[in-house]
Length: 425
Ligand code: HEC
Image 1 (cartoon, protein in one colour):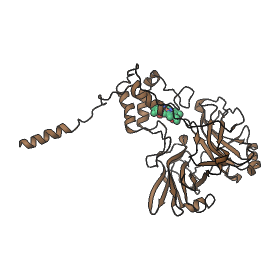
Image 2 (image 1 turned 135 degrees about the vertical axis):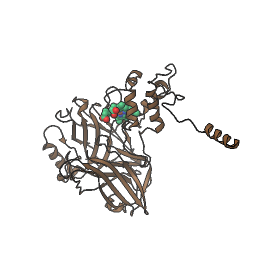
Image 3 (image 1 turned 180 degrees about the vertical axis):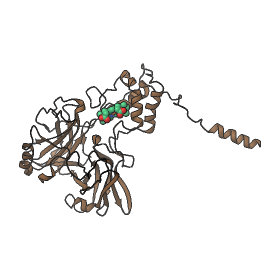
Image 4 (image 1 turned 180 degrees about the horizontal axis):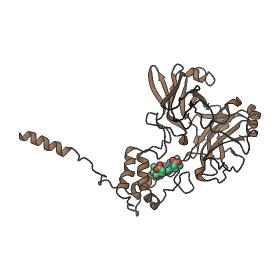
């Protein structure tokens, strides 16, 4: 072998990093320096005493005993719960861990979860806080509700009168669960004053406070249509502030249906969930753009028995989905998105095709009914009237009968919701 070749091989060997075997011991993550800040930022919203998660991760002792489970749950991306994939445009309050952060949990566990230098711990990042001034309006579900102990998940709707004398623009919303162990999510939907009698009769037709509502705020058969979406709450959310320059119009006399999902794994202690609104200053109200909800649905579902990876989808131009109801021609800016299926959903997507180019507005590759939420874009996405919008739902049906659209737990839905304003906010 010529010496130049040898030199070359030597150089190659010197430059090629050794194949990693086991944990990278040059990086020795510890609780005090590395893991506690990650837990504080990404886990503590739920893993605290009295929180929605079944155990706290506040102290070293608690985390040490769970180190293996934490490594496994983060590597499998079960934790923290965050459904949208990277194909979705950048989202506010994104919770997913980076590959490097997942590696910290992994290596820390493999090194037997060292506590590190407790004399000089790393500073804990402050919990994410959404600014919420004093509430202008504060209502609750009206009863100390004791969830139905016969089921594992109780979906209950409560009719709440905002008693608002005139129209206002809401700037922010805060939902405070009365029982953080059981309240898993809350969706607040607005209805017009003219629907009061219909809503009261839905309430009266059902025994006990409120009514059972798995698939949506009101039964389809009632014919009552929501006037708008106020917002939703999932564990970890402190408040929801609509993007600057926008707001949700709340008409005088409006009613709200609060759908509360109780997960009975947290017990059956009573709950009295509260809803608060902060209104825009009256002088600025007229300058704010009202946020419109544009629903996209695939209604005629027929998911055959024994199927998996079964796709149901609907594509229409933006102007058709908007039905000219919200803005004149289907031209607008999408500021947020949400998706809804039941428990047989596998994947959820909202796609836009503009000038022949397809892009993703929401992609949830592993649907989990328990962690559905609504998402706010960091940058709004423009919609043109001729853009095609697709809602695509992938299902499995292990049962023996065809699954169709409906509100029951055994039925399915394929429903997207876009939050749209007319001008770029
Ligand atoms: C939004 C609330 C929430 C956040 C944030 C969260 N968890 Fe959880 N976690 C839960 C709940 C609720 C459970 C109980 C099981 C379930 O419902 O999925 C759980 C269960 C677990 C479990 C046991 C079950 C399993 O899947 O292995 C581990 C371990 C865990 N979480 C670790 C973490 C870690 C580590 C973080 C942060 C990186 C985190 N969690 C963030 C809510 C949360």
